[in-house]
Image 1 (tube, rainbow, N blue to C red):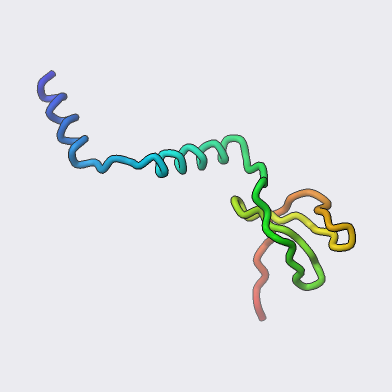
Image 2 (cartoon, helix red, strand yellow; image 1 turned 120 degrees about the vertical axis):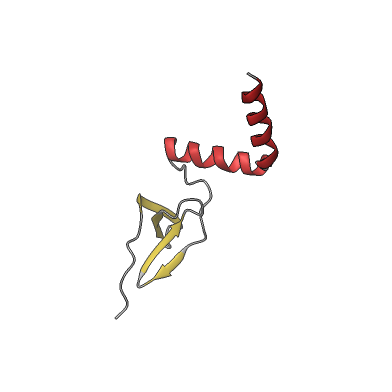
Amino acid sequence: MQAAQVTLNHYRRDQRSMTAREVTGILSDWLTRVFGCWHTDMSRPFTRDGESYRACLDCGAHRKFDPTRWEMTGAYYYSVPRLSQ
């Protein structure tokens, strides 16, 4: 029993303690992986190659944007990087 306590005490001393921000970040990442992103923090509209969209600042998902009606349309999608030629 004494050996286990010495080992635990030694381990605690060597391991740096986590800050509240780090714990919150870890929990947030875990919850996002389990339940998915709610896309609550979206970028301003962008237009590239004739396509307008907004991007989620948390996970990077895109959603088409209609500049004439000033609203997002369609489902969320993740853009595939294009190869430059």
